[in-house]
Length: 493
Image (cartoon, rainbow, N blue to C red; front, top):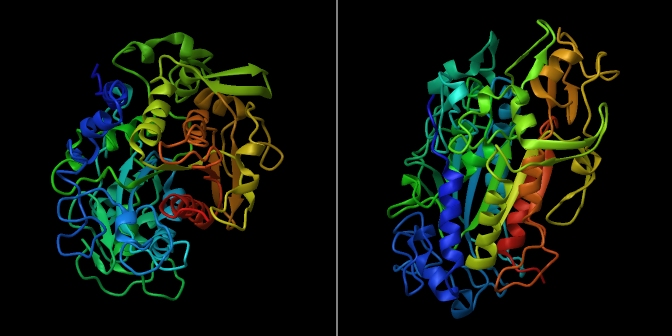
């Protein structure tokens, strides 16, 4: 049995070390961006050495007060905090997410456009310095070896058109998730995409309109739409939280050198897209977990207990009430990676490092039906507030949980997942969306709300947005993400 490296545990140790130091020592000891004792970075990237940057050649942390301008590259008198934004996408690459990947890739041009249109409080454009990295939920669990594309939190840099075989799983061909959004193979030069002003790390590209809005998308948008789709042959024990931690690990190769992905003085924005519960199991402390029959469900076809994705729910979630409908379902500590590991690290960045962190979860919750018209355009109806934890029910949707054309019974699905769907949608005639809840991701995301930084005592700051993976259009989710980012790069009036 292979024991996988648990990045969450190593980052916890790093956080504990930092927490034992005073403010100046914490900044000096931080591994993020290679911060040195004088508060400067020895490997901070401005995306291009010749670009008009908000930091000087030494990589000094952005100080707009000294510049006298809220616009890092302009003359506006607004009050921007930073123009640097590091965005991580953790994308479920298991066998049931082809349509959702297509939905996300289709909206990547909108993401790039909205980021480039961010303004300060005076309404002047902010020359954003953006870095975007894509990885998968595949942490190569020992019980799921042999699947393709195990990334272990490392960056994906290839165009999806070069890995079309990864979009065919169990007879289902989802290659359109790639080809519809990547008409020409376009990739960034390096482990992640960056763009700043009119500069980026993408070669010249032909005109292409990825999202069909009638406007040709720029090189950055095309590259993200090509790299973003991850395929459907990854591990079916998705571990998005541990993949996130591996991706932001200060010791990871892509976070080292002259151009690290994670920069100390940048906003960190994490997006997780998955249709199942987080399965970040601590295989170092609990290598026996896959063989623990108490975590198995009964296979209705054979009447005996067997392994299934339901292990992830049984090992990580405890529900009260039920069966049928449950009063609540909350994360447990073991044998999963303790949920506090992720919360403490991310909130510690805010509290101890003055580093803003925001998160978007596109997961198994009911479709959001209304959003606040004002930034950051948070959900106000539907979504996580309407989530009900319950078992699967027989009957064809909407009279039950069985999708049209499917042969599974409620007992089959209960065996496979241990909990009923958080959302189900059938749209465009035959396209289908269905996902189980992800309370561990919800818990981590919502833990960011109300956390106060040393230089910001706003206890009402919202940093979490939860949207539904069953939505047929992720544009509202993208708008919510950029809204959260805008709240952190621009000081509200």
